[in-house]
Length: 316
Image 1: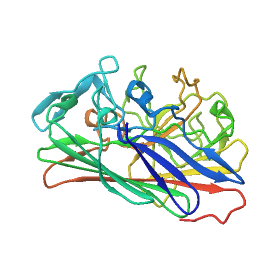
Image 2 (image 1 turned 180 degrees about the horizontal axis):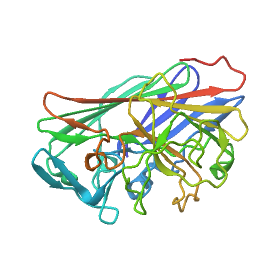
Image 3 (image 1 turned 90 degrees about the horizontal axis):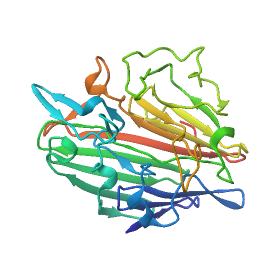
Image 4 (image 1 turned 90 degrees about the vertical axis):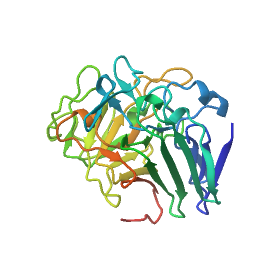
């Protein structure tokens, strides 16, 4: 399996797989040591059997679609179910399973592309996807997601890395999390939204001020400001030496505490911070989503900004 390597003058290193355009490794210098930021398999070939979407680019539409039902205009499409009767992350043959081809590579920049056929996963197509990874000298990773299609279809991909900023990669319980979100989506037993978007204030979902995760279980979508230059989430390492800030022009952020991870990993060994549209948006009144057509290509941006104790930090 082909692996692409990026680096910058700050000493950050990022490895991307051709399969699923997945983030395999991401390291940064903390003091005199190099620290891994995401969970990964030891061998790239292990990603072929990965059930956790580890580091992958998922889609065409990230998260769940109830009963796999998608209506575009007067046409009803039956998407491939892969989580009970629902579809998750584009189905079993989604973007995470595809081989992405190289379009451009520089020392700190990578552009990959892939084509999804008409009917793949149940989606109308064909659809062309591009992803651009760019490492900045200020220890930021900027990701641009693009799609264009010859027909009207649903898109909304995202990235699915499991973050763990600790040295020993123990459970994330001692990480601190701060979310700049006033509302969250209530879900049913199948993690499908009920349509309710209550305020987080005064609830267990209130992370307006950074707090330690402990044993809080999350697999919820939070409503964020959708501004690339305003932080949506902050994750702080247990030793307080490293902070990850996530921002995006997507309107939602799925936070998943990795409770269903299993061998070779452990439950809660990583946390996912996934900018995206809301789960099941096409079937929910008032929820945002995007239909791509020949005249309306798709673009979304995600920024992961690293900040380290004792260093001059980049402010937005």
